[in-house]
Image 1 (cartoon, rainbow, N blue to C red):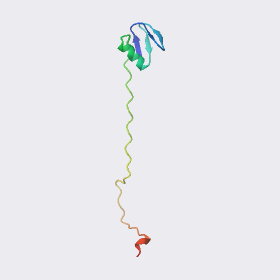
Image 2 (cartoon, rainbow, N blue to C red; image 1 turned 90 degrees about the vertical axis):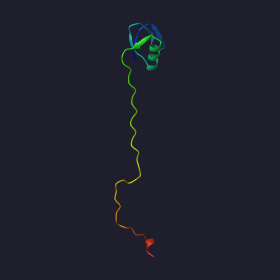
Image 3 (tube, rainbow, N blue to C red; image 1 turned 60 degrees about the vertical axis):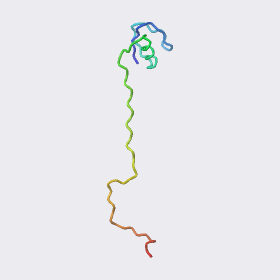
Image 4 (cartoon, helix red, strand yellow; image 1 turned 120 degrees about the horizontal axis):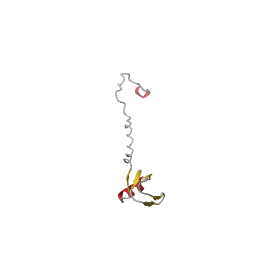
Length: 79
């Protein structure tokens, strides 16, 4: 997340950050700095990715098929 630093502060992985600078920091770090008053969001936060729509359920039913009029005979039927 891109933030604008308001007060000089130190970030573990980024070192010293001076007032007036803009930095692209990990979301968690940026949110902490904003919450504690050391920074403000430089741009609107990125919207979270939407979940993919689920695939329709597959069924084993035969829908819309007509039954045939032909009758099958098996050898057991001949008595």
